[in-house]
Length: 303
Image 1 (cartoon, rainbow, N blue to C red):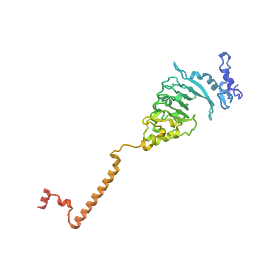
Image 2: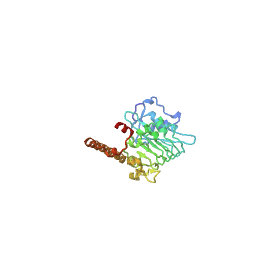
Image 3: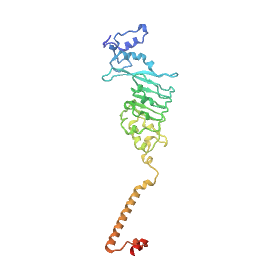
Image 4: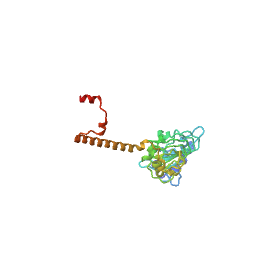
């Protein structure tokens, strides 16, 4: 059947799943392809798919993350058609509500979506250090105990993600690089694309009111649900004229002090210049010099 364009992937999949004695053996498996069908729920386009990709459908569950008391659910979400590459199956992994304390150590091949909502996860280290997370494009970790996203700086995920949801965690601050650079310069408007931070209580200050507030409104889908922990307001309701008022101290008057010193210096220069002119023209010493008592050296000079 090698190089045939009429073989349907659905039919091959049914035979691959049969018992060993009833399986069809393909002598040239590396050269065998099948046609995807729009009527098959795994595909939304017609394409020539390598046989080894169809065989991967049967082994997916063996690669799905699992533990002693939990088992994630892995499903094929779509067929990815990339230029100059063979079609591959994109995998979605659902590990939600399983009382996990950390992210799974290994994801299936071509995993593009991971849902770990409603767990007890505290760290996002795997997103930046684990190679099996490199193909991830969607990450959902709502209702966990995540307090920082600093580990995402410089990660492949942050450079290429489509959807990030960290709703109702314990995030107190968003790193400056996230909202002053173009790393999140994505103009998605759908709930399937973008960033969600709603339900987190940030520590709000002047920068939050002046800059972070603007970033949230343009980049975060649920910006109206991001709260402040130190003031009982939503971030979008912050008034920069109130948040940027600081207690007065002596540094607030530094310009007045400098101006006064400059005026005093100019006055002294003018006075000395005037006294010198009077002494040269009339021989009179300035009034302070006339009133000063004579010193011993003055008597010696006179004698």
